[in-house]
Length: 74
Image (cartoon, rainbow, N blue to C red; front, side, top):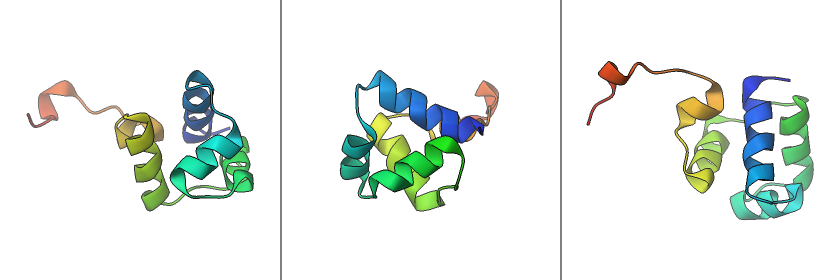
């Protein structure tokens, strides 16, 4: 399972949402959420942005990218 797949699943469970509820919130099918979480398919940039916005996390968090604090613009 990829970092992104695991992170989506973790965020969804922490929010107390079913796959169907998350799918409804971001406008995809439940099967799509299942595929992402199992690592059977990857999401596109648009959906990564939707997920990040919904969960109020940086895209880099979903992708497993660490950005050094001294490079982040304030």
